[in-house]
Length: 629
Image (cartoon, rainbow, N blue to C red; front, top):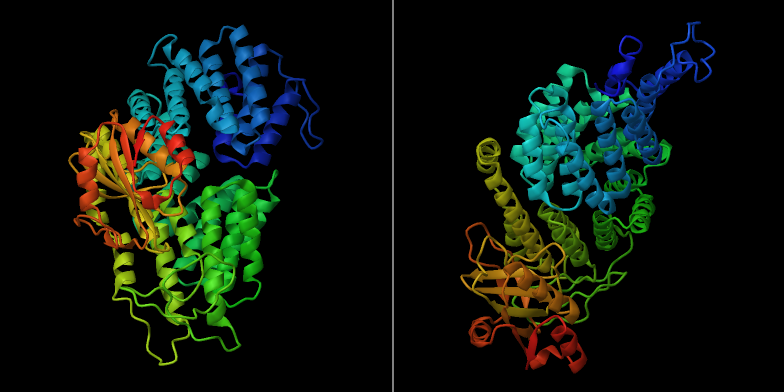
């Protein structure tokens, strides 16, 4: 028995929870409660004899209210109501309904408490799945929600294995199968396997549509839009997001509408339709602000889109809107939002001299870029291999943050915007544009490299035939994308790099040498047994030591590393597909690699130019290394 089965013949509540606005579902719950004699009937309700009260009917009513609270994001209420329903079903010996209610209560806790709830959730869901017949619906739902806990905990490979197991068991339960396909497609969007995600989510959307499940269909189309954006299919993305927005409007789903409208406004900006973008973003902000409680994350994203649209329209109110978004992202502690806000500040600072109505000082090339709040003309010109823009705008911080989040596509957009702004800037007195030898164009092209049609075809084959292989490929590619984003961001950094030549027998195993999401490093070279990492010279020694310690743990063996300072070192261009490494300036690694090979296991050899004092060396030794100089 499912939790709402006691209401069959009394109420269409199960259908309404899938397809009706919250107000309509709530009215039906009130009507049922009145019929049970547990509440007051609505004034306009026709008279009806009370239903005979029974524990199962009361448990079903509590479950219905809990399911609506979960759908609407009222998570404290959802946990309380669903736990109560599970207990009531258990007292009546309705084991399947009890376990399904327990699963929903676990899901509510996961959404409310995030990572802190993962371990207990896995334990409880395993207990549910292990009790009784493993082919029953509750076992399938428990496996599905276990995968949710694994994804929240950051174990994508485990989440995929669990979801595939749940998918195999879901054949008798098409409604659960559609939900599992939604989750699997969402996981692949997160991993960047957009072709596989698209195939699964299209199937999910069709199953939801056939069942009349507007809630599940809206989720599927929202993720389909994200997958299409990842594939560069702008029109497909727009169609999917418009479908999500329409469904969510019918359901009264403020979260889904705000999300869809914000994505649509970003698409309009990308297509150069700033007026459409402003209207869409304004609607998104109003919907997010009108929700209870207000959806502050989507308020911030919508405010950002409004500010960028106003900026493109030449509206003087753009800066205020962008600052509002940035302040809210900082308050929320939202990493992506903070990175985007840093991008916006850089754009505004770079555009100031371009749009100024007063004469501006001639722009001269400079040799270094230092963070500042205003744009100052350079006073001297120093000869260099390449020419840096004469501005103190801090593009690098935003680019590095976006690259570290595994979003090279965002870094590409930032690089392109920077080029467009600088091309519109006042030219030097001689009227000739400053040449950089095409380095920025090549850096942009390298960051944007892709072959989506081949990748998509292969992903679709792997998702059905060899899903474990797809997970390995997707995880390795995600790490490579993160590294590419960092290398692209380093093209904007001021000169100065810390270089580490690393030797260990397992360096070349399955991409383990690529820096993790938590690291501050980028990898520029890898050979069997050898690798080279870089850090901006301003990176704290403790962070460098921690990164090397994390690499040692990943490799599972002591490593040998020689560290040196390249005071004028720069990354000029990240590698193209098939290239052997990044294009560098003033960085020497040959002698450093030979030195690393000669060291003892666990030894770190420090170049005197690094300037690390004894206290710093001791802190690195505390991580388990032997420091020599």
